[in-house]
Length: 394
Ligand code: NDP
Ligand code: MG
Image (cartoon, protein in one colour):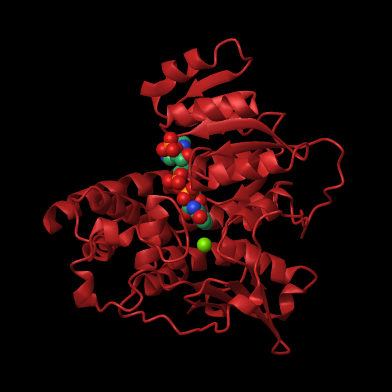
């Protein structure tokens, strides 16, 4: 599964979402591993200040700011530095195809990750995949494209990195179960009734992980875990019946794999994304780390419990989406993005995020064997339905 890394020249990286939680940690790793990696492309959404700072430090060939209103600011600040500056969504798609890009770290949020990932795979680039929504929206398409391309996907998501590490040297036909661990989030012990009064501040207080706002809310609803079940299905080619989520509040075991002889392999570590990002950018090489690492004796007890799907029904939705196939998961993702954004803007109650998703699912078109254009159409339609539905819940 891993590729040879024995190269003398640095691996050239395009970071999509360089100003975010994953993007900034990836840049830390690149700084700490001088000469091993080189930054070719940095792309951000609207944080022009940080993008400019990163460009001055890492000197990429290309800088992209998706927000067109910030383009002139970035261009002017970087003039005379031999950095091409672009704006708009299509710029990321063109940049990932460049000859000076070996691997694309997809670390933008949500649906925006799909188009550049598709283009990168078609151009034969490797993918360090943080943007799980790409596989949620269009896992079937990505699986098809990978079969026709020399590109490989290296998971960044900690659970999938753990599974990937457990599978090294194993025969996939011996895998009986993928066990994805979940912290359970900040509302692990709340009743549905208690969830009716959850505020934005409450939802952004993840017990173990520091992450961007959208994924932090998804973790609290367990939609993040639902997406990770879908992500695992497409990354590892394992049917949904063999993928289980288990709550492990300490977030030390990042996931496990069970084999035909009953053995269970696990990967452990402190909750820190540096290891999985580094492992993905290194194509599975064990790059020495000077960061704090796990001392097992610090964890006298590690506990596990099955998730309560009545209180966290998103998990049921993931299994439904995989069984239904077609564009079901694309619709769920779009509705979730719209609902979470409304919640974060104080326009939707926390408890109604799930209701918006199911109401959208009932009304959106379902297309079987979808191609890229079908995902685009369903995503647009589902967003519009979700926005309408939200009005009823306000
Ligand atoms: P953040 O919100 O912290 O960062 C998102 C990044 O994407 C920012 O650089 C943002 O730019 C940029 N961005 C947003 N929209 C666009 C767009 N339309 N075009 C270009 N760039 C855009 O998110 P995270 O880093 O937390 O998450 C990124 C991805 O990684 C998500 O898919 C998430 O599920 C996944 N992931 C994250 C983990 C984590 O620990 N954070 C763990 C596992 C997976 P700007 O800053 O300018 O807005
Ligand atoms: Mg994860």
